[in-house]
Each structure stands twice: as structure tokens, then as C-alpha cells.
Length: 128
Image (cartoon, rainbow, N blue to C red; front, side, top):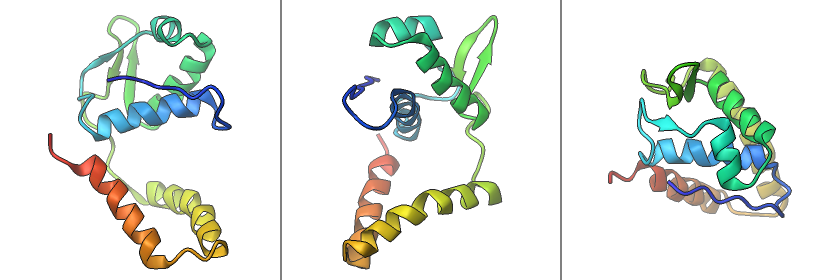
């Protein structure tokens, strides 16, 4: 899996890194139990601060995507990613709310918005 960061983006680097790892899991490029580089190694490979990588890893750990072991290092959660529960749906609604509000303000058609969501969802659902 290749990680590409946009250092000119307004989106923080740790957020870009976090979302690319999640996308890798969703696309089955990263599988349960697979090792990820250490914080230091990934920071050096990407040419970014190790605290940036650490922040992304800590958020991924908190959300159940990865486990961090002293002996084994960083691995994709071998038990699988936690299923969507009530708190997940609440958080998703919170994240979608401003995006939908913006689409409505820009007079984007609901069907176009839903079609875009469906296309993006299918990108992650394709079986390799």
C-alpha cells in the first residue's frame, strides 16, 4: 500500500495518514494481523515528524483499527474492525451533517449527492 500525503492541504497530515490507512483496510490492501511500520520507520519513510505518525496511530488504536504491542509492534486489529454500533452512527451523522448542509446551500441535487455517496462506497466494496 502506498501512502501519499498532500503537504499543501488544509487537512492535517495525521488525518490524511489515518484516513489512508482506513482506506487500505477497507480496500483489503491491509488485512487483519498485518504489521504496519513502527512510528519512527513510517515517519522517516514519509519524511514527517514522528509525533504526527504517533497521533494518527493513537487515533486508529482508539477507534479499534490497530493494536500496538511492545513486542509485536503495530498491527491491523487481528480480531477485525469493531462493527458499527449506536455511537458509530451518531458520530457518522455528526460528520455528514455539515457536508449535507453545504450541498444543500450549493443547490446540489439530493439524487446527485446520493449517487456520489454510492459510487464512493462501491470503490471500497469491490472484491479484489
